[in-house]
Length: 194
Image (cartoon, rainbow, N blue to C red; front, side, top):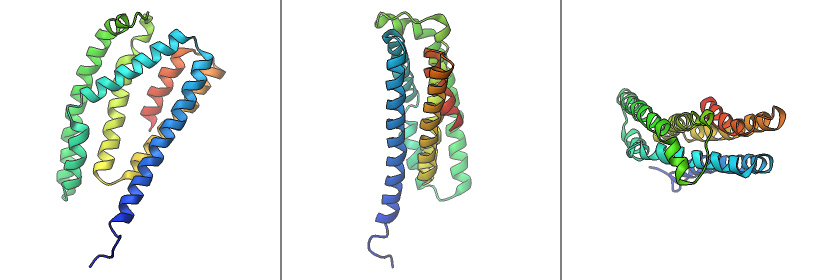
């Protein structure tokens, strides 16, 4: 017989891990963006924010509900072999959708910028598909970890990613004076490291 509150303890632990991961993303991300906004011209910050928002939108749109369905399916599966096969099939599907979405993002960067009367330099267009792929794979990883009840790993990935993003971006921006590229590279490399 289970003790009263025995279900609440794991739930609260998972909730604490999730909150810790999300709060670190919020604090480090906001801090990094504040420094970037003080250092870079408003047009460059606008380009970065537009491309980041577009990448996040395309990432979620191209998942076709996978981010919602996969954790439930993995959590309901008791057989590890079946769960691994399910995650592998989902990864294959996700890689195909990300490749197609990245190609679309590459071709539509000019159209997106024209909607907001922004001039996106040609050398920055490559960052939109790279952001889509980096965000998509990172989100897939955290979704799989949550589906397998490994909330601490998902939270750790968020913490590592946010700290790495802040460290890389601030180093490239303030020490090496890379400009807007620092924001893009910091985000992409941090998502890849985590």
